[in-house]
Length: 558
Image (cartoon, rainbow, N blue to C red; front, top):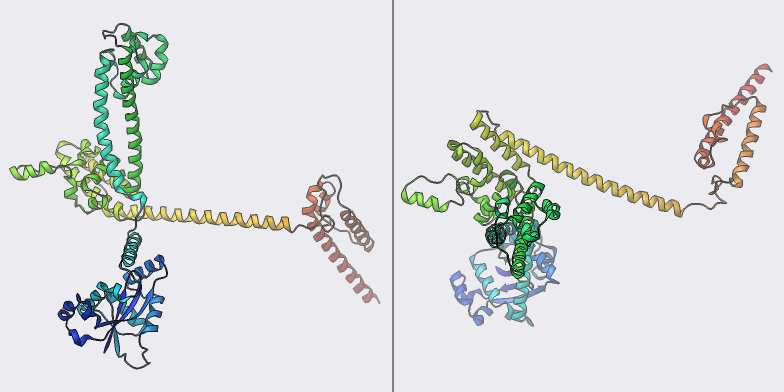
């Protein structure tokens, strides 16, 4: 039985015929030994056909199809054109060797071509891959390498689903920078206090906040220039008028020494740097909060943005944190204490980074370990939901936080908490309701936009298809001075009809629309003209009915 080989390269599909297998042997060891020698391997394998890909996008689509075990139309046409045709009801006298068994089963289902994928075929394909540029004419090895590199990059980008908004590396960098900024701002603020206290030592006792101290040191400059006129400015900085007055009074009786203008300039510049760092720290904290709500909303709502970011950074990534069991997450950050306890055979730590959560601080001393274990359990659940859920919602984190609150009440007051199954069911129902509402809102917006577009189109059609003033008998003058002539002719016709009806002895019923028509403004005539025509038609029908009755009476009399 003849053996054909299907080889998928970065440049296209190629079909080889393995016809000289007797020279090297039928076992895999013989093929493996002959692969390195092109003169021997060239006598075994012969190129039958080659179909290059049209573009890089086409190569990516074909590669994705092969990796998923699908046969494209392009591959089917290539095989049907170059392989021997099989008659209906007869077995094929050849087989096709493929590298992917899934592709082989798909080819057999669609085209009934028998396929095989074993070690012998894989060794032959390995030799084809090694000497592929020698089999194809005008194909340089550099071109093949470029095609392989480009296809590899595009295939990796297509396979890896990369969401820009869920990059946990940004959270890791932000929390590291936040910690370093806290240390730097603290040390710089102490340096400003020590430096400026040579000039104004009393200010250190009045103002405790480092940020406010730096702002006052920059605004005051020289203490001898302070007067009661500066009280409003100081009150705006401090937020308290009494403290501002106290600063002015302390400056009058200060024990500090005078500084030269150059020293004061340096102190002011350094104080401005501290102010800028403090403001940047606030902006960075806001950025961290927004990123945590995008990446791990449930973990942030459960334990807080800063503690959640510390857990993610210590674990390395959100996926690593999700893989951690609750017992590991509980002592995450207390590794030294854990190994010291194991070495000395002492008590292991009860909590690590989650100690900074407010729940453990609120618990009593005997319940701290229990609430830490329970909180670690809920944090592991929240991190797994954030990592593997496609819907970005914080409802699960809020429900888990409520459970921790109920557990605290249970330890303190003995109130029985809800079951976890009931809480999770309520969370799932609320998330489904929110998603359905969002979908409904999106559909309503789409329908409203479609309706608006239809209205605009109809208005345009009305504007484009309006008749001229001569053709439209119901049109009213724009200025409202007098109606157009065709309307007066119609009124005359109506009067003649009414006189004929009165002569026949029929009294037409006057509707409210007819009665109001004489006294209504001219702008409403266009709308009410159709109603008048309907009323006239009713009167005509009644008059015809009375005429028929008169004729019947006369016939009976005769």
